[in-house]
Structure formats: C-alpha cells, structure tokens
Image (cartoon, rainbow, N blue to C red; front, side, top):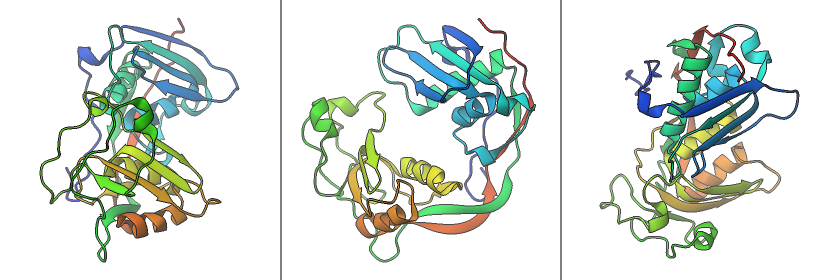
Length: 271
C-alpha cells in the first residue's frame, strides 16, 4: 500500500484453482465488441475484443491506465470463451478477474508490471455538510426476484455504515456470491446491493479518471438517484444529485494513479 492507500496491482502467477476447465480463442471480426463474464452455468464470453481490452477488464482499469505492449494488442481482435465446470452460483468480481488473468497468462503469455503515475484523480467522500444519508437499520422486504428489482423508498437504505451497528443478516437472494444488482438510464440510477466501490467504478467511466473511495462506508445499500433526464450515468449532473440526495460527493485531487505496463504478449494459437 502506498501512503495514499492505493493497492498496487498484483502480477504474481495465478493459483490453479482459478483457471478455466476449457478455453477457446478464435480470431474476431470487425463487429461490435461485447462480453458476458460469468453466469451460474460457469460460461464466460468475450466477443471481438483486443488484448488491451481484456487486460483492462482483468485488472479493473481504464484505458489510460494501461501502456506498453505490441501494436497488435490494440488492433487485433479475438473471441474468447471460457467454461468452469460445476459452477452453481454467480462468481464474484475478484473470481471473474482471476479467471481472465489465467487466460492472459497461459494463452497470451502476458507479463506486466506496476508503474503508478502522478496525475489528476477524484476522491469519493462523505459530504462535510449533510453526511451520508443512509438509514443504519432495516432490510429490504421481500426475497423474490421481482422484489429484488422493484425500487423502494427511502431513497437510501444502508445495510451497514462505518459508524453503525453490525449489519443484519442478508435476505436469501443476497447471500453467497451474489453480485451487486443495478439498473440505470439517463436521469435515473437504482441499485439493490450497492457499495461505495461500485459507485467509484461507475464514475471512473463517466469522468474518464481514476476515482478512489475515501468514504469509509462499508457494506451494501439500497438506493435510487434521480437527476436531469438528458444527462447520462456517471455525469457531473448525476454527481451533483448524489451529493444532495445521498450525502456523498466527488472531490478533485492529485496523486499516484494505478498504471500497468505490458512487458510481453504473444499471439495465441486459435482452437
């Protein structure tokens, strides 16, 4: 950890238990790229993606946080499919990333190293005036899938806050390896299992800058945001609404930003 609290990216060899049972790689085409990373059946699909895009996804980075590598890493496209036998639950984000890293290591012979850079970033913090407006008690009612997707009031209901009591037991559909669930469109964002890390990640893509969670708030929350419907998710207008309605905001700073350099990569053998 640095003095800024940024964990450098791990580039160590991967353990055997996070490898796919079956992986196929074929040349891509010039169509739209897409990916589906991990369903309960253990299937993963990345369609028409570059090596750089796979690295970005595996390490949870923005394009500006990846450098180096051969020219084909940003131009040549691939269809990558993976299968994990016996998977019965949704994988966690960490498990999904570890699986993709195993493909990069074994099929692309990828080698990278950490090289943090100084630059502009944003910190997600609790607003000084009002503070986090999550309710430190109560569970969402209902356990069915339909209930899971239904927006409710109050706008924010915290399962756990940094200064609150221990979080109550999660309902059945949130236990185990359940993934955060969210929906959004311009002017509207809703989550049934949100986290500050999830919010930071969302604004990274909206702002195109590294966002570091400094709220100190842990656990999950259920909440909804509304703002000007012409403005997209991750916009400055959404950030203003987040400050008013949830009591958390983005503050511009300067500091070290995680960055990796591709030292080596090899063209995979299609199969």
